[in-house]
Length: 350
Image (cartoon, rainbow, N blue to C red; front, side, top):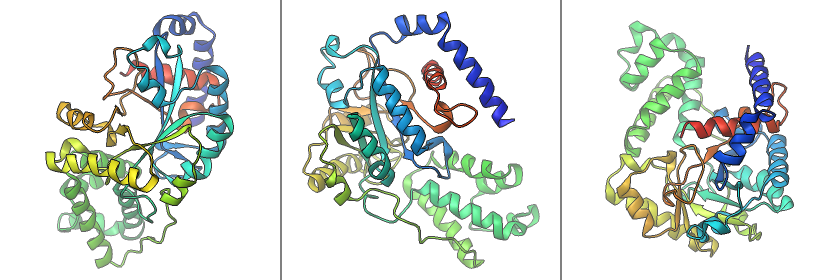
């Protein structure tokens, strides 16, 4: 069923590409606009496939956009925002969120070889460390709990387990498999960072109380400062993604200010580079947060889909998030038809 759905999407994308719809779209809808691409992981395995592009796919995607359209740096876009006629029509900007180690190991060599500029947004509290975002910690915990202690999670037992959040209890009893994890992640995104970590700590208490083995001796997931300082390519710029990847709209103003200013300070100290670009964790922002960002940065990106035009808010730049399914056909091969069609569909959601 999955391959059939992918095959149907490929056929629709193929027809779209060679139809009058695409010609109209290219000449009138995206004319004079910029597409900012948002990548996260460039690796063959990750718990959240919505954030993953495989190594081979990424290289072929970059080769395609390098041939097809101008690829400009975020620096160039921002410098020419008030002189929009200087920005090449239908150009692309490439960005990466979080500062995963595969940016350095996998993406950077491809970008450097193809001379493609890119901006990587760094979460400074994770650089050089063997640690995980709370989403990955939660996924790992729940996977082991479900595997080893599923019998404890029956309707009769689960109500009396104090360490398990009430919402999680409901999801366990009414949902199945990975759906529980992703629904609970979405639920937790409505709370402060401290409350999220407290919820996960409670689960870890449950894990320890029942001797559930969770492998925490993982390899380093995030790029180190030494690795970042090995990047000498002037086409690669560093931006800030806060210190702890907090969802800023859930936090008090003093915490927001600290996350925004401290991350810039750390990156500039560690890399001796100027940092002028910011990216909101999870894309969440409001007028107050944008005002704080504007005091220290020249641009800020969201996760909201859509294009960038001369009328865009420079502190709320739209991006198109890219994952493996958005750029490959039913066989898992890169497809320019699927890539272009996916960008078209994402732009409609804006």
